[in-house]
Image (cartoon, rainbow, N blue to C red; front, side, top):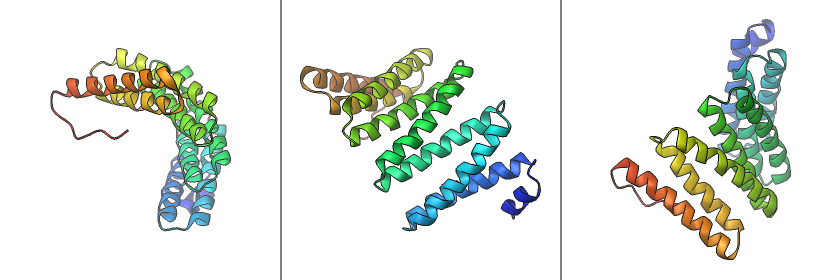
Amino acid sequence: MRRRLAADFPRNTDDRSNVAAGLSRLAYLLNRVGKSDEADAAYVESLAINKDLADEFPSVTAFRANLAANHGDYAIFLAGAGRPEKAKASFHAALALNRQIADDYSSVTRNRSRLAASLTNLGVTYTITNRKKEAEAAYREAIKIKKRLAVEVPESKQYQSDLGRLFCNLAIILDGDAKEAAFREGISHKLAEVIRSGSPTAPWRS
């Protein structure tokens, strides 16, 4: 019904956006039950709708953010399907959009956090494909963003947790003293998160 309404009333952006969101959720569920080809098609259709909305209404940040999230979800699907090169392309698309949004609205911490998440995902993909220099650059930029956010919002435990994981990801691709230093930095941020919480937590898995 929503898809038909979106086709009949193309200026109704809410219906079109809802259709795209529904297709993305459907793609996730199809992939969970092993229907990867159908999932791929649903993701592609969802991306097409979100891209049209972002192109038609460039001043509406929500449409660009939806497209970025859509690219990120599709990239995760592609990486899981053993298609790392195509996943990288979709992660790069998400990164470009999130960087633009973060530049346009830098005072909004969520925008910068999403940018760091895109960089992290790209770093993981580079790690998997053994492109360590590119992975290191992505991780270090994400770390820089998260460190600044942790200073600006010191009450947030999430930023400390994210930094802990980022430094451990970075340590995986480094060698020697640099590897040990990165691991130690990761542990220190995880400990800071525990101390701020005021209560013990379950064992942490990096």
